[in-house]
View 1 (cartoon, rainbow, N blue to C red):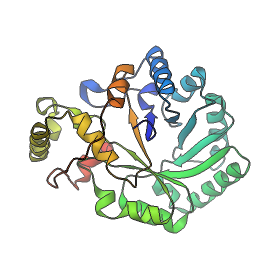
View 2 (view 1 turned 180 degrees about the vertical axis):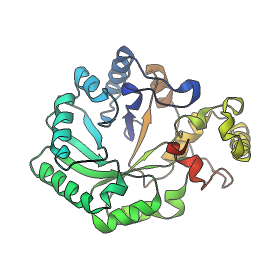
View 3 (view 1 turned 90 degrees about the horizontal axis):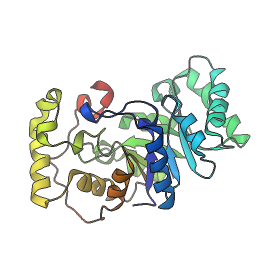
Length: 281
Protein backbone atom coordinates (compact mmCIF):
# COMPACT_ATOMS: atom_id res chain seq x y z
CA UNK A 1 0.00 0.00 0.00
CA UNK A 2 2.65 2.52 1.08
CA UNK A 3 4.93 1.76 -1.86
CA UNK A 4 2.13 2.39 -4.37
CA UNK A 5 0.60 5.48 -2.79
CA UNK A 6 0.93 8.98 -4.23
CA UNK A 7 -0.60 11.78 -2.16
CA UNK A 8 -3.05 13.85 -4.23
CA UNK A 9 -2.90 17.54 -3.35
CA UNK A 10 -5.88 19.17 -5.11
CA UNK A 11 -7.54 19.98 -1.77
CA UNK A 12 -4.35 21.71 -0.61
CA UNK A 13 -4.95 24.49 -3.16
CA UNK A 14 -8.72 24.88 -3.60
CA UNK A 15 -12.08 23.33 -2.57
CA UNK A 16 -12.36 19.86 -4.08
CA UNK A 17 -14.72 16.94 -3.65
CA UNK A 18 -18.46 16.48 -3.82
CA UNK A 19 -21.36 17.96 -1.85
CA UNK A 20 -20.56 18.62 1.81
CA UNK A 21 -17.25 16.81 1.28
CA UNK A 22 -16.08 19.63 -0.99
CA UNK A 23 -13.41 21.32 1.11
CA UNK A 24 -10.03 23.02 1.03
CA UNK A 25 -7.59 21.79 3.67
CA UNK A 26 -5.99 24.33 5.98
CA UNK A 27 -2.23 24.75 5.71
CA UNK A 28 -1.66 23.45 9.25
CA UNK A 29 -3.47 20.18 8.42
CA UNK A 30 -1.61 19.93 5.10
CA UNK A 31 1.67 19.90 7.00
CA UNK A 32 0.33 17.22 9.37
CA UNK A 33 -0.62 15.02 6.42
CA UNK A 34 2.79 15.47 4.82
CA UNK A 35 4.64 14.81 8.09
CA UNK A 36 2.68 11.60 8.63
CA UNK A 37 3.18 10.51 5.02
CA UNK A 38 6.93 11.08 5.27
CA UNK A 39 7.16 9.12 8.52
CA UNK A 40 5.42 6.23 6.75
CA UNK A 41 7.84 6.18 3.85
CA UNK A 42 5.56 7.87 1.31
CA UNK A 43 7.63 10.16 -0.90
CA UNK A 44 5.56 11.14 -3.95
CA UNK A 45 3.10 14.02 -4.39
CA UNK A 46 0.73 14.71 -7.26
CA UNK A 47 -0.04 18.38 -7.86
CA UNK A 48 -0.73 20.77 -10.76
CA UNK A 49 0.09 24.29 -11.84
CA UNK A 50 -3.66 25.02 -11.78
CA UNK A 51 -4.23 23.83 -8.19
CA UNK A 52 -4.46 27.36 -6.80
CA UNK A 53 -1.48 28.14 -4.54
CA UNK A 54 -0.82 24.46 -3.83
CA UNK A 55 2.71 24.48 -5.25
CA UNK A 56 3.64 27.44 -3.03
CA UNK A 57 2.27 25.64 0.04
CA UNK A 58 4.32 22.55 -0.82
CA UNK A 59 7.36 24.77 -1.30
CA UNK A 60 6.81 26.33 2.13
CA UNK A 61 6.67 22.85 3.65
CA UNK A 62 9.86 21.78 1.91
CA UNK A 63 9.61 19.02 -0.68
CA UNK A 64 13.15 18.79 -2.06
CA UNK A 65 13.41 15.15 -0.97
CA UNK A 66 10.01 14.24 -2.44
CA UNK A 67 9.18 13.09 -5.95
CA UNK A 68 6.93 15.76 -7.42
CA UNK A 69 4.43 15.13 -10.19
CA UNK A 70 2.87 18.29 -11.60
CA UNK A 71 0.65 19.02 -14.60
CA UNK A 72 0.94 21.55 -17.39
CA UNK A 73 -2.41 23.25 -18.18
CA UNK A 74 -3.76 24.26 -21.59
CA UNK A 75 -1.19 26.48 -23.30
CA UNK A 76 -2.34 29.65 -25.07
CA UNK A 77 1.09 30.84 -26.13
CA UNK A 78 4.12 28.58 -26.67
CA UNK A 79 6.21 31.10 -24.68
CA UNK A 80 4.16 30.14 -21.61
CA UNK A 81 5.79 26.73 -21.39
CA UNK A 82 9.17 27.88 -20.06
CA UNK A 83 7.56 30.42 -17.74
CA UNK A 84 5.15 27.91 -16.21
CA UNK A 85 7.78 25.21 -15.67
CA UNK A 86 10.29 27.62 -14.13
CA UNK A 87 7.54 29.12 -11.94
CA UNK A 88 6.61 25.64 -10.68
CA UNK A 89 10.22 24.86 -9.82
CA UNK A 90 10.52 28.21 -8.03
CA UNK A 91 7.24 27.82 -6.10
CA UNK A 92 8.05 24.23 -5.11
CA UNK A 93 11.64 25.24 -4.21
CA UNK A 94 13.06 22.20 -5.97
CA UNK A 95 15.76 21.64 -8.59
CA UNK A 96 13.93 19.09 -10.72
CA UNK A 97 10.34 18.04 -11.43
CA UNK A 98 10.21 14.25 -11.22
CA UNK A 99 7.26 13.92 -13.64
CA UNK A 100 5.54 16.54 -15.75
CA UNK A 101 2.15 15.54 -17.14
CA UNK A 102 0.26 17.19 -19.97
CA UNK A 103 -3.25 17.88 -18.70
CA UNK A 104 -4.85 18.79 -22.03
CA UNK A 105 -4.50 15.74 -24.26
CA UNK A 106 -6.73 17.27 -26.92
CA UNK A 107 -4.32 20.18 -27.33
CA UNK A 108 -1.34 17.83 -27.38
CA UNK A 109 -2.90 16.00 -30.34
CA UNK A 110 -3.02 19.27 -32.31
CA UNK A 111 -0.21 20.94 -34.28
CA UNK A 112 0.56 23.17 -31.33
CA UNK A 113 1.03 20.04 -29.21
CA UNK A 114 4.12 19.00 -31.13
CA UNK A 115 5.78 22.38 -30.41
CA UNK A 116 4.84 22.20 -26.73
CA UNK A 117 6.23 18.68 -26.46
CA UNK A 118 9.50 19.75 -28.09
CA UNK A 119 9.81 22.58 -25.54
CA UNK A 120 9.35 20.11 -22.68
CA UNK A 121 11.89 17.73 -24.21
CA UNK A 122 14.40 20.61 -24.23
CA UNK A 123 13.75 21.22 -20.52
CA UNK A 124 14.12 17.49 -19.87
CA UNK A 125 17.52 17.53 -21.61
CA UNK A 126 18.51 20.40 -19.30
CA UNK A 127 17.74 18.18 -16.30
CA UNK A 128 14.76 20.23 -15.10
CA UNK A 129 12.31 17.36 -15.73
CA UNK A 130 13.01 13.68 -15.20
CA UNK A 131 9.95 12.03 -16.81
CA UNK A 132 7.20 13.15 -19.18
CA UNK A 133 3.65 11.86 -19.28
CA UNK A 134 -0.04 12.50 -19.90
CA UNK A 135 -3.11 12.81 -17.72
CA UNK A 136 -6.00 11.26 -19.67
CA UNK A 137 -9.73 10.66 -19.34
CA UNK A 138 -10.60 8.36 -22.25
CA UNK A 139 -9.13 5.11 -23.62
CA UNK A 140 -9.06 6.42 -27.20
CA UNK A 141 -6.85 9.32 -26.06
CA UNK A 142 -4.19 6.85 -24.96
CA UNK A 143 -4.08 5.13 -28.35
CA UNK A 144 -3.70 8.43 -30.20
CA UNK A 145 -1.02 9.71 -27.81
CA UNK A 146 1.00 6.52 -28.16
CA UNK A 147 1.00 6.95 -31.93
CA UNK A 148 2.34 10.48 -31.66
CA UNK A 149 4.68 10.65 -28.67
CA UNK A 150 7.28 8.77 -26.67
CA UNK A 151 6.72 9.25 -22.94
CA UNK A 152 7.18 7.44 -19.63
CA UNK A 153 4.02 7.89 -17.50
CA UNK A 154 0.24 7.87 -17.91
CA UNK A 155 -2.27 8.96 -15.28
CA UNK A 156 -5.83 7.76 -15.80
CA UNK A 157 -9.12 7.14 -13.97
CA UNK A 158 -9.71 3.66 -12.62
CA UNK A 159 -12.20 2.52 -10.01
CA UNK A 160 -14.76 -0.15 -9.24
CA UNK A 161 -17.38 1.40 -11.56
CA UNK A 162 -14.95 2.74 -14.18
CA UNK A 163 -13.13 -0.20 -15.76
CA UNK A 164 -12.76 1.21 -19.27
CA UNK A 165 -8.95 1.05 -19.27
CA UNK A 166 -9.07 -2.69 -18.58
CA UNK A 167 -12.12 -3.51 -20.68
CA UNK A 168 -10.53 -1.85 -23.73
CA UNK A 169 -7.13 -3.41 -22.97
CA UNK A 170 -5.43 -0.06 -22.53
CA UNK A 171 -3.36 -1.17 -19.55
CA UNK A 172 -1.98 -4.10 -21.56
CA UNK A 173 -1.13 -1.73 -24.43
CA UNK A 174 0.67 0.63 -22.06
CA UNK A 175 2.69 -2.19 -20.50
CA UNK A 176 3.81 -3.39 -23.91
CA UNK A 177 5.18 0.11 -24.42
CA UNK A 178 6.87 0.18 -20.98
CA UNK A 179 4.66 3.01 -19.73
CA UNK A 180 4.28 3.54 -15.98
CA UNK A 181 0.57 3.54 -14.98
CA UNK A 182 -0.78 5.82 -12.24
CA UNK A 183 -4.44 5.29 -11.34
CA UNK A 184 -6.48 8.22 -10.05
CA UNK A 185 -10.15 8.71 -9.10
CA UNK A 186 -10.21 5.41 -7.23
CA UNK A 187 -13.04 6.93 -5.11
CA UNK A 188 -14.46 8.98 -8.04
CA UNK A 189 -14.02 12.33 -6.28
CA UNK A 190 -15.49 10.81 -3.10
CA UNK A 191 -18.78 9.75 -4.72
CA UNK A 192 -18.07 6.05 -4.14
CA UNK A 193 -17.56 6.63 -0.41
CA UNK A 194 -21.03 8.08 0.18
CA UNK A 195 -23.89 6.17 1.79
CA UNK A 196 -26.94 5.66 -0.43
CA UNK A 197 -28.83 8.44 1.39
CA UNK A 198 -25.91 10.86 0.91
CA UNK A 199 -25.74 10.55 -2.89
CA UNK A 200 -26.84 13.87 -4.49
CA UNK A 201 -30.08 13.89 -6.48
CA UNK A 202 -28.31 14.39 -9.82
CA UNK A 203 -26.83 10.90 -9.46
CA UNK A 204 -30.15 9.17 -8.73
CA UNK A 205 -30.52 8.16 -12.40
CA UNK A 206 -27.86 5.53 -11.70
CA UNK A 207 -29.72 4.16 -8.66
CA UNK A 208 -29.40 0.58 -9.94
CA UNK A 209 -25.63 0.97 -9.87
CA UNK A 210 -25.63 2.31 -6.29
CA UNK A 211 -27.94 -0.52 -5.22
CA UNK A 212 -25.59 -3.11 -6.71
CA UNK A 213 -22.58 -1.45 -5.10
CA UNK A 214 -24.08 -1.19 -1.62
CA UNK A 215 -25.55 -4.69 -1.76
CA UNK A 216 -22.05 -5.92 -2.56
CA UNK A 217 -20.52 -3.89 0.30
CA UNK A 218 -23.08 -5.27 2.73
CA UNK A 219 -22.49 -8.84 1.56
CA UNK A 220 -18.76 -8.44 2.22
CA UNK A 221 -19.27 -6.42 5.41
CA UNK A 222 -16.66 -3.97 4.15
CA UNK A 223 -16.38 -0.18 4.06
CA UNK A 224 -16.45 1.51 0.63
CA UNK A 225 -12.87 2.73 1.15
CA UNK A 226 -11.67 -0.84 1.77
CA UNK A 227 -13.32 -2.27 -1.32
CA UNK A 228 -12.36 0.63 -3.61
CA UNK A 229 -8.73 0.55 -2.46
CA UNK A 230 -8.54 -3.21 -2.95
CA UNK A 231 -10.05 -2.91 -6.40
CA UNK A 232 -7.31 -0.49 -7.50
CA UNK A 233 -4.59 -2.56 -5.84
CA UNK A 234 -5.88 -5.80 -7.39
CA UNK A 235 -4.64 -4.79 -10.83
CA UNK A 236 -0.97 -5.73 -11.01
CA UNK A 237 -0.34 -3.54 -14.05
CA UNK A 238 -0.91 -0.38 -11.98
CA UNK A 239 2.34 1.03 -10.62
CA UNK A 240 0.92 3.78 -8.40
CA UNK A 241 -2.42 5.06 -7.09
CA UNK A 242 -3.16 8.75 -6.47
CA UNK A 243 -5.32 9.44 -3.41
CA UNK A 244 -6.17 12.71 -1.67
CA UNK A 245 -6.91 12.99 2.06
CA UNK A 246 -8.82 15.52 4.19
CA UNK A 247 -6.66 15.04 7.26
CA UNK A 248 -3.95 12.94 8.89
CA UNK A 249 -6.49 10.53 10.40
CA UNK A 250 -7.96 9.75 6.98
CA UNK A 251 -4.48 8.92 5.68
CA UNK A 252 -3.83 6.74 8.73
CA UNK A 253 -7.09 4.85 8.16
CA UNK A 254 -6.23 4.34 4.50
CA UNK A 255 -2.81 2.90 5.33
CA UNK A 256 -4.46 0.44 7.74
CA UNK A 257 -6.59 -1.09 4.96
CA UNK A 258 -5.59 -4.71 4.47
CA UNK A 259 -4.96 -6.00 1.00
CA UNK A 260 -7.23 -8.95 0.30
CA UNK A 261 -8.48 -10.97 -2.62
CA UNK A 262 -12.02 -9.95 -3.52
CA UNK A 263 -14.13 -11.02 -6.49
CA UNK A 264 -15.64 -7.85 -7.97
CA UNK A 265 -18.93 -8.54 -9.81
CA UNK A 266 -19.46 -7.15 -13.30
CA UNK A 267 -22.76 -5.47 -12.40
CA UNK A 268 -20.86 -2.73 -10.52
CA UNK A 269 -19.57 -0.79 -13.50
CA UNK A 270 -20.68 1.78 -16.04
CA UNK A 271 -19.56 3.17 -19.40
CA UNK A 272 -21.63 6.34 -19.06
CA UNK A 273 -19.22 9.28 -19.48
CA UNK A 274 -21.70 11.70 -17.91
CA UNK A 275 -21.11 9.78 -14.67
CA UNK A 276 -17.49 8.70 -15.01
CA UNK A 277 -16.02 12.08 -15.95
CA UNK A 278 -16.48 14.58 -13.06
CA UNK A 279 -16.10 17.51 -15.46
CA UNK A 280 -19.61 16.59 -16.67
CA UNK A 281 -21.10 17.01 -13.21
